[in-house]
Image 1 (cartoon, one colour):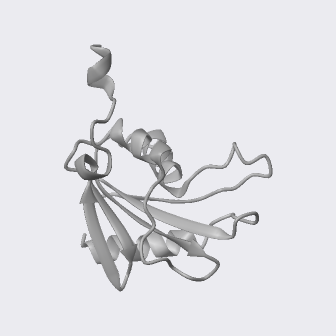
Image 2 (cartoon, one colour; image 1 turned 180 degrees about the horizontal axis):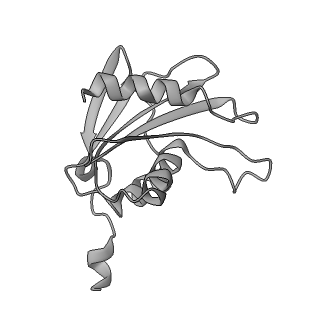
Image 3 (cartoon, rainbow, N blue to C red; image 1 turned 90 degrees about the vertical axis):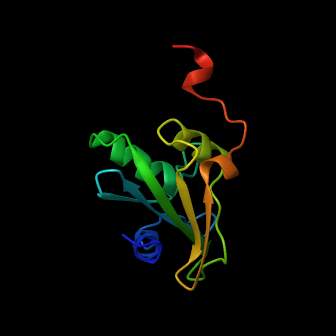
Length: 135
């Protein structure tokens, strides 16, 4: 699957966003090592803290379906119907993804017209993970 194809799936996932408070709609498409794509959108809540990001929605969906290895995630976002030039994941999503992804995991950011790719090692340097717990 190409980066552009994965990005287009993220754009489609964004259509399902439930964001009545911020109107900032995000879509994500997470590519499993198996080749299967898991989509997610942000889901806001009036209590704010129960809100869930698109990236974690896709990740949790994948984990709940038995996929534990991933190669890339495409992320798009913006206010209303507008797509930002770049929508980077929040720190919580970076940490959640790092549980299952190594430093070569790819973040495909931007929109279908312009794409920027960064790795987990670049977006979350000096991360804390399972290895630090000496399990």
